[in-house]
Image 1: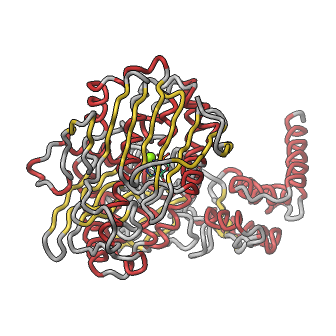
Image 2: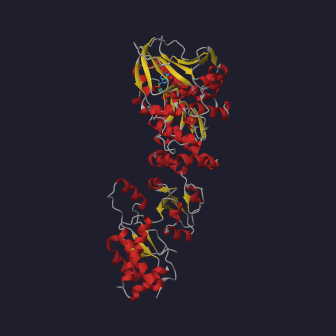
Length: 618
Ligand code: ADP
Ligand code: MG
């Protein structure tokens, strides 16, 4: 039991919550605790290796960097020890007593919810680190000493309830020794064959030797440096699981080996799950940078552009100096060259996937469309490639089907020069937009932009394959004259003049429409102004942003417009005509979600209803 000496600390409340979840969790795959401890040991060894390579004249260079696992059956204790960087007292408090990643808790909440639904596999999917040992231990002791000169040793003790203690201790050499006093029911973790099995399953790729009761467990060498011909899919999948501390398989991967112009190995993975879509934290860069198998930087910001932060993996280059500092990183020509090359290859890989394995690509798109769109906007150099990766719904797709821009361009109608698109909150809303009518009639395809980001994307692209993007709602799309309706047009002309006078500066213009088939009227975007969708987004940030004035077009052939034309001819001053005119515009505003004064509108509708009712009973 924890001795009542040393200084007592309370866990951060988040940690307490986490411990609660873990200790009472029904999670069956408890063995992952060992994976977490070994991975922490390996991290500490990696850091030590790095110090040896960069700090001159450090003592203990000749010692083997290793993980040692000991079993003490008599006392029921399992020990995982490393001679890595160790921890100072402050580091113990900071690293073990608090949760650094703000996102961790979010996913713990999900864990908790998932528990009821049986989706506890999140533990397996993302790994929960050191605390997972409390699933099997009733008490944990850490004995640690930092590699820094003159550092003392410390003992940390906790039973995983609300507090822990820290006291000064004795320890030879640097590193960390973790002792788990196993719970009664968890004695299987004192069996060497069981532990060996766990290590072979989860920790085979750890780049340091692991000794179990003095016997060294065989391990796999760095996969990324091995020739592709020697690797099977299984090897790639296994390595990914190791890398991500995860049970989940990757969606797709790419293994690159290059000698010129720069030497490097790269092994990159696209996951099956998006952290960000799960509503968790914004993803951190996921590609680690190595030089000759020595980890230089975990999650390097320099080797991948930000929008590809969902990509996991390893890049290893002999040409990157070990003692490179963060500042010189950004301007390092070789790093830059590697990044360019790798990103290009990765985007090409995705394009090939899109062409050859549509199902897989659709899954990638479902998870990471937002990242690829972000790239289309930000990564000028690869804009062309990224535009090939975009997928859209359209007036000619159904259900979950998506097309890319090449497909759109390939089936454009004869004489069509522009790529038409229409934005809206969802497919249904876009389909109800009267602006579509003329395109349906002319059998021209219209892209449906259901994600607000889409409009930024087409705005930035401006064109694809020499064909400009054009909003289907633009007032200035040239349309041929409708034949045979001249009479209706001329008659409606007077109504147009009347409507203009009635609306005043509520609209930019009123016109007779050539594009409407079934609807009485439509509110159009002024030529090349921002779309209403876009304006609404701006308005979320700036409440006072003024909406552009729109153009109202009326359909002279529609029964309602005919009625109003007749009414106008009979008596331009009729109160009903005015009510109908105002309501016509308000209906459009209502549809667009920009109706201001609802009270006046409701009063008017009721007036119109009353009149309709009176006629019905005449
Ligand atoms: P993570 O590994 O994701 O940071 P963990 O809960 O596994 O989260 O570990 C928390 C922190 O505790 C580590 O980041 C590290 O700073 C420290 N730590 C854990 N184990 C060791 C160890 N064996 N040697 C040195 N530091 C360690
Ligand atoms: Mg860890």
